[in-house]
Length: 271
Image (cartoon, rainbow, N blue to C red; front, top):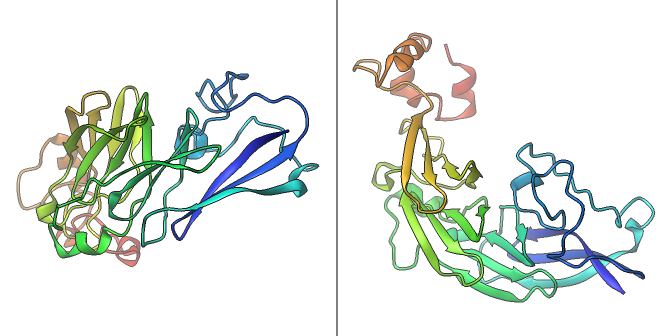
């Protein structure tokens, strides 16, 4: 008998594995199989990227679960995670482990086959919130990134933290925004080309100028920052690029939204 993982679902702090049972031979988790056509992952039983590829197509080459066998699905295991709030991020899978972030930027690692909780990392332990907005948005974290033997999470107090996938020990951290200026991180990092990319949030209140940062995935060294909108039009811009961009934004946008970050209806009224 064997179990082939269909997917891992998360809801209200409950981690659930759905699987299909059958007879015959199948490669286990971590064994080499045919390369995936979509994902740039050597082992298609893993799910190392959000959407399982840089194209976010959510496709898997596994075929044991299909239109003929889907009715045989059953619950393989379920486990309650140590969090009071619901989970909103997507789990990632590598080398027989499931990695998931939750409230307070916590990261959980579970055994893929049994659901056993292997370790928990709490990057905000003994760190008070830097602002009212962070107090509110600490309940949200939308996922992690995997790079080689690291799992990387963005914290609500503006840090990227890299954790050893096997031991749950911190390997490096890097600050990518200023939590004292009502910036925070709720989104999942992205990885590529040996770099980690992360944006930030200000609660859609139009308080700050958004930017994207890149750090070295192996060391955490900050590499660059790109602002997604021009700066204060009453002051000199950072470069000719932003001088040109500022001319396209009309009047009054900076005072209202710092670049269309207050709410969706403000974006729709952009000049």
